[in-house]
Picture 1: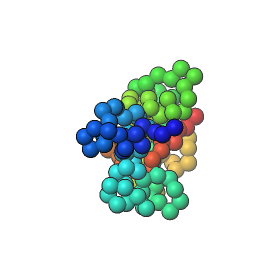
Picture 2: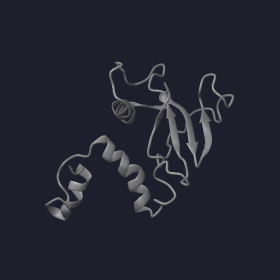
Picture 3: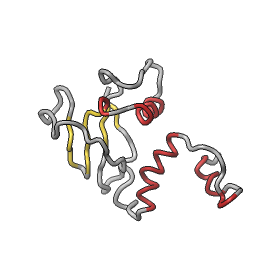
Picture 4: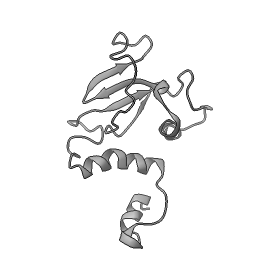
Length: 134
């Protein structure tokens, strides 16, 4: 089967675009690899392949005061989707930009505390994935 992204590219109508919404995975891909490709930077950023610049968030979906609930039966894709739509700085444990940790809020982890006082309000998502701590 072809993906919805492939269907959009070859679809009928004006400019080959179908009138159907993107799902969260497609939107995330467009915001990461899609953006990198449009900027001509897909050889340097956009995902976690070796040799590319690393921008990433380490999140805790079980963080105290989290803006979303987990019920124990969610697959990792569902937790990721909840974080994309409802997560905020309370869920962010670490932030890496160009491979350098700029924020560390882990409790008892290595690094000895925060690299900055609070997580950046805007972070790039070129990494293409969000890692989750248990």
